[in-house]
View 1 (cartoon, rainbow, N blue to C red):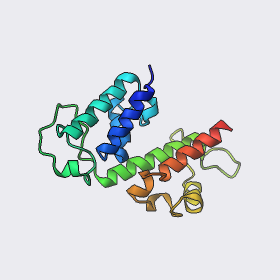
View 2: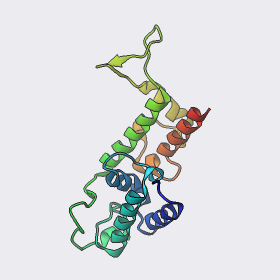
View 3: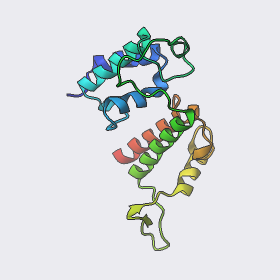
Length: 176
């Protein structure tokens, strides 16, 4: 059964209160054992697990992922259990995870490199993304107007960041 509307609303309130909003993908990824990164794709049990983890963060029983939050700086309790989300994710790893998410959207969009005869270029049997096209799109349409690898972590995953832009582009392109 999919996440209920009340669970979703409560979960987003907890993300905001705990200052963990920028890390919700990691919470969802962990709760779904890597299956999803979107809160909308959670089932009711997974949503309850995320809610429980966020409540533990707010109660000081689990270390937050956001190193800039007040809760992170004041954290001193031992982990709740061995299922704690790894908090040793570096900003560079977080940025790379967000870039990989963008590249996944590019796969959905079919932005593949092509040969002169307009066939998709393959490497080891897998299609190769057209990185020149991706960078050109980022430079022309992203809010920061710079190539994919030049975007900071906040520009990638922040409110209306590049991940959001690619998600919306994919949604709008596939729906049409």
